[in-house]
Image 1 (cartoon, rainbow over the protein chains, first blue to last red):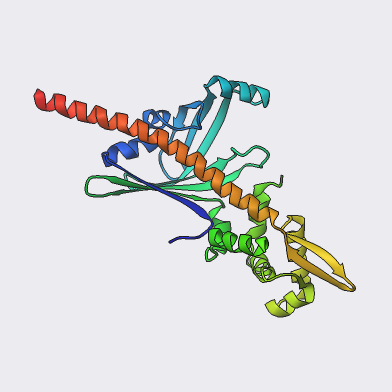
Image 2 (image 1 turned 90 degrees about the horizontal axis):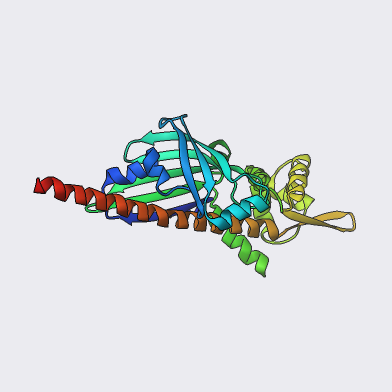
Length: 158
Length: 117
């Protein structure tokens, strides 16, 4: 098991591989589910290739989200961009995206990797999030952060 | 609240990670760390200053010695980040699943119509 400083989420779907891939990589697909709760997205530009960008608008839609954004003096329509780093059709997609959803925390880049694996009658989806740029990450690639944190928490709890 | 970007930059150095690792056993004086890590005192002191600035360690004086120990907060914050980001994506994947089910249904519906033709 990978215990580095990353999050891994795995799910499997009884669906066609092509459909799963399309939801991640087409305008219609992305617009059908992307974005946080209470928001919808509109894809403005989609350049699906390494170093290409996905540019979309994130629009507060639920009344409580609209109210929240207005109260926080944030625009109801947010401009978002992410940059693809790897595009292997129906197998692997990786991109760099700013994680900025935690109030009070400065935004920073997170590498997102989407891997698809066709099984007998399902598609296995593995999502991996790395919290650092690859170059910084490489320096400490041997460290097991999630594991380290657990150990530290134990020590500190004494 | 401290900025995460700087937390990660602070941790992105092998020597600082080794210092944190050594401090896991408890409080250490700068001299102990230098001996243990077979490093230059100036280097260790510099890294300790950075760790202190980022809130990872606290320091107290014991006569002429400066003793360093770990602080709990940044580790808890990192742990909180993990949980929050995971939960954000779990929710997003629920919506993904709904969208995919619709697409799959449309495909099956189409397959049926096609075969009926």
